[in-house]
Image: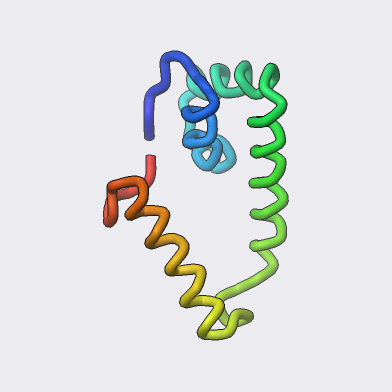
Length: 91
């Protein structure tokens, strides 16, 4: 989990997952919520993530073809590689 002093859009995007999972400290949650209150783009991103979670929660691995599952795993692997931290936990 990352400690954030000043939240900008890049930080906000990185914190959204922990925010949705209730993993942020009270301090970081307040700072993120303050940023979200003044940033339409990050607010929209948060709503997109909530919608994605709601929809994805209805699909299990058994509902996907092998090709679709492989494609999703490739996307995740590429995301990790592009971040420069393959194999590490996301912040």
